[in-house]
Image (tube, rainbow, N blue to C red; front, side, top):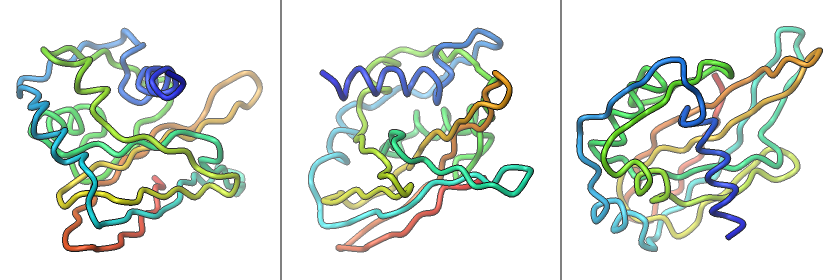
Length: 170
């Protein structure tokens, strides 16, 4: 239940599901069975880190933040293009919320794997199936009561026991 609650809160900010500035409609249907197959255990691994360099030179990591592993489906590709401006990699600044609507949105947002960045800003997904995935995290901090930072996404393709290393940074 903790993971589902954390995922819901995380999705609110990463996916823009809590904002109301602009509504986006995803036309590609969500294929739940394809996504679930891609989330079955496999022989691949994704290790990585998340960080944003501030204007003043300081570095903020994803320490303690959730990291999502999302199967790349047609629906996910269309979603990524709307949210991040690309289906390869992208950055979504805090405060640029958009609401996203499409049939199956709840299933889409919950058919993912979730982990956390450790105290140094590193994460690890083991036993990942072959296929393409989005790795997504959110890095935020506050300056004079103003939230700064954003969400970062990068696509990764795995097969045959590969080990990918990903740095999530704008």
